Length: 230
Image (cartoon, rainbow, N blue to C red; front, side, top):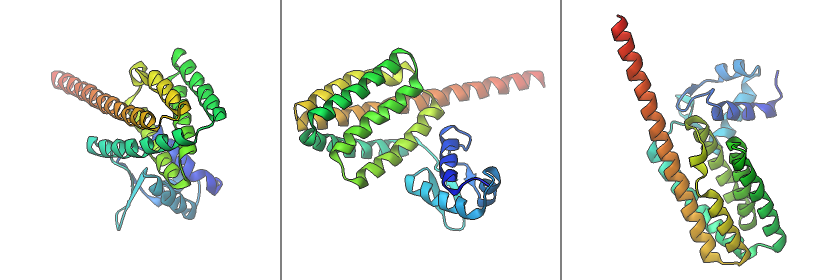
């Protein structure tokens, strides 16, 4: 059997990879069999993932992977915008020269990944960039909340795809944010971060709509082909 500590990570990985689709029902028996473990570590993993927002548990109905719609994404990103803007404001008050240099090094790696069209790595480094700023400005609770959001967002970007358009303007936003932090300009840091998250929201919603349209067009084509062959 797998070590208990691995189960939550394995479920999380399968959700992000689309192996366990959004909205799909999860049962203890199914997951125990899938991950070659007993019921107890699966229950523990589901409790953990419920706290992260990836899993929804309902009385007498069991657990399911969170269903996603545009309204949920809007609420999630609006909440994240407010929290991260405040964290950036506080980071601007507290940031040291060493932290600014460390942030610049992270941004260099982010831009290198984009230049190499390694967009999956760019997403990882982008997360590192924002987590670093949040760690300067936050106590533990907001950071844990934001981490849960990142897990959901990673699953969404993986499901609906990303490319050069995902990162349009991101490098510029990051560089201006670093400048604001270095200058201890709290107002600029707050505004740049809030707008940065809102642009990400609009890009994600656009990507979801485009993907759904393409999927519907494929279904229509398959239906037409089936009717013609019947």
